[in-house]
Image: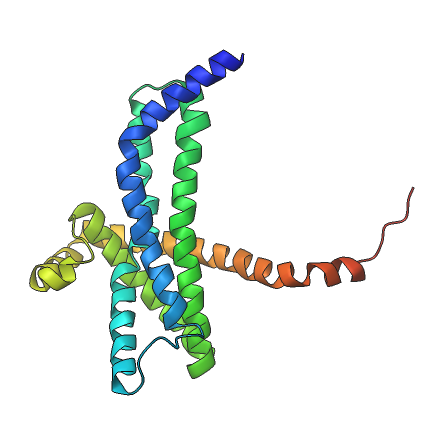
Length: 227
């Protein structure tokens, strides 16, 4: 039994090996906005210079954050690679024990980075401009990410293409959003991102509240009598 399990795990690693390079790279790109959100929207940015340079660096960081943010939910579309791997005819044990868990972990890290990044942005907006701006900005962010995901998945643009060839990105975006099929894809992507974000945000906020208060919560909870 052990030898058989070891054999199937070896087969699974061989199946996963061709995907490791792009998985690591896409995970890194997804974590970039999470890192940027740490010093853009949270306290403790003392390393930034004072005066106008501080403001300039903050705005440059904000632009970089927005440009790279679509890379985080983009990992959800990488499920097409899992579909292709399954079509190769790997054993059900290879698919179940290696490929599916690896893809789930990969997508959870990427989308989790997106959720945390936008939550940090929302808290920053709430602190400075009030709660009424948070939902509106979140919807705008989801829409921009839906467009970015379409450009990345179907037109093969990267985040840095906004710097190297911004005219091509703008022309392609306008041209394709005028067409019905790309527009439907963007709307469907927006709906998926918005729904998953809302669900994950509620879970994240609940855990963020519960974890530091878990001892007090357990103490105040009514004790069950035996029998």
